[in-house]
Image: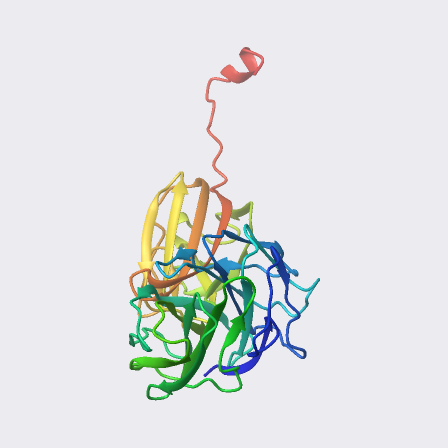
Length: 360
């Protein structure tokens, strides 16, 4: 399951610090590895909008901007670290009153895994000393759920309550005393299996009973499912012939003996163990099929023996898409598309020699 790796923030720590700039550049934790999950929480006391000013060479995804009734504007960006920071990332605010940025980094169990999100919720909670974030049951294992509380005051926070929730080495809070103050705090839960997180609460220790905007998001790691290539098989003998590449030509009589002997198989990562593969053929022939078990043949198979080609010769386009669950459902993986031609070698006969007569 994922593990917590590090945190960095502006203002710099949990002490009462000030920041009122319209741009914040974060220095990521040292010794990060490719595949790490990078989450950046941005808050501003007001109604600011947010953007990524300098990506640092990463691809950032927005969870969504929210302006709660508590006078707190909130945005969350996340990225899968690609192994190199081209520059320290910069985040921009449309207004500079009480601007705060906190970066959390989690490490996946497997560095080649990718990340997805689920169970996203943002709620404006009424004024109270203790604020409870509703628990959920993630759909996916190997997950990290982060809860975040935000107020328009420089509250201190304590008394974290919730089974398996922790603050780890995070500061008790991230206060910003610029202008009229703001405060954020965090907790997280790590799971190897998909189980109920239970509710989690934090209590405002000082300057309490403030209205709070809270956000809860679950990230999960999973192996990317991809279609890597297509193969030509002999449907008559169930023998692999060769790989098919884009703009390829299948020669009847050379590659396979007959048109019906053409069989095309999609190969995947993980090898033959994805949830399902959707195959769609267009052009001189059309065919659509979802294969839930390997081998993934365009026209299906009988206990591993490919079924014969039921289409025509000519030019075609074929797309295959990997999915994490059966029936082309779950998490969509990568797709692969190729164009190819099936050449029967047939040349129409001109018994009267009319092409020569007309100079054709």
